[in-house]
Image 1 (cartoon, protein in one colour):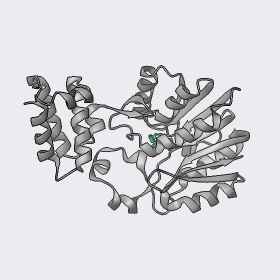
Image 2: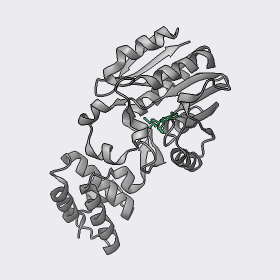
Image 3: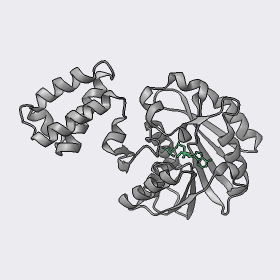
Length: 282
Ligand SMILES: C[S@@+](CC[C@H](N)C(=O)[O-])C[C@H]1O[C@@H](n2cnc3c(N)ncnc32)[C@H](O)[C@@H]1O
């Protein structure tokens, strides 16, 4: 099979399940992953024939994509802020809106040359913590997660990206106080209400860890309340608390942080125009 024939085949197999732009990106990702063909090679040599083994791997992958397996889990990796991260079903696949949150923190601190202590709560793949350590190498970064499976992946990612991060297995909901003071506390905690399940793509629901996603309908801000309370005593004066937030609960999240005494609350929208990030100051 040539690149051009594969392109037709993959579109035929997946067109009822995915948008055409998404299928196009699967096509390039699969060729890169299994055949090490760059996008440029694929574009300029459409008649190039695929070796048997590469063709077989790609055909198998297309069947997996038909059963909704996210391509990132299929390939075992994804890109976040230009860095490569291993992912499996123990961790949430890091999202583009989280890249925007990291970018916000980076812009706030890129000219800050003094020592800096950062805590990431609910680190998952380690995407936030590891990227911040890469972008702000002077920072001392700590990352917490309750899931041992997630921490194993995060540790692997820190090693692969040569980032020194201090990982702790801890349940933040039962933590009564943090042992250190931080300049920045950042979290993308679980925030999807069970009632919002209907809006979610089947591949998220079937494969991504529910521990990372869902909160009870009757108490959707439980992580925000707990983390804000901890931050109130564990951030240094003028320290910043950054959250990724549920777009439907932006006002409620803002009220919550104000009630805990935080000021200078800024809400930001993501690239899709949804209220997605919040920063406030102690
Ligand atoms: C929405 S995911 C965020 C993952 C990663 N920070 C990211 O942005 O891609 C939330 C994370 O919180 C973790 N988590 C859930 N409950 C927790 C708890 N009680 N204490 C600490 N971490 C928890 C989950 O294991 C998951 O990794």
